[in-house]
Picture 1 (tube, rainbow, N blue to C red):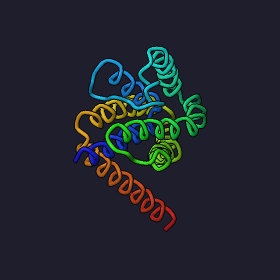
Picture 2 (spheres, rainbow, N blue to C red; picture 1 turned 120 degrees about the vertical axis):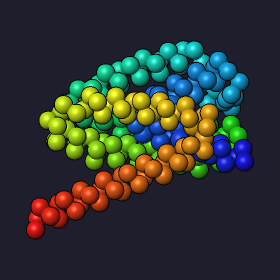
Picture 3 (spheres, one colour; picture 1 turned 90 degrees about the horizontal axis):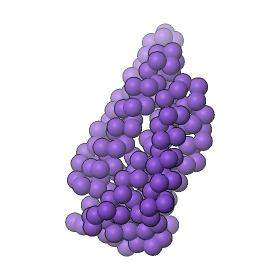
Length: 191
């Protein structure tokens, strides 16, 4: 059961990294540094280093500010196309290896795929649709919601990993519903 919870934690943290790269890194680092809930194995124990936590905190502030402006957020999403999957790979490998002996290469690939998929849906589908339909006015509330979801998901992934499975299933259902609805509207518009 511990191995299952470790994998669910890893998936939750990497999905969170797809929304905001630095929130799960900071949460894992802070929890590992100040509590016994997480003991990171080398080289991932560097996430708990106070200097690394300061740098990640500064990067988090920069990303949160950049993500609130309509033109800047698209540039930020382009830059984050590399950073978010990498952060997802790091938190997946770090958290999966805390409890399981999952091969680091498999863990990194899983983290890349999960965070990269969440980021792609966010950057290529959701955010452009929000910008187009609201003239950019919806970007700030959506960005704040993404930050809140990333924070809550990261914390829940560590404290109650089984809820991550429920959250991920609901998120997939929501995305499939939204894409299907969009296709139906497009088909009706062309008819």
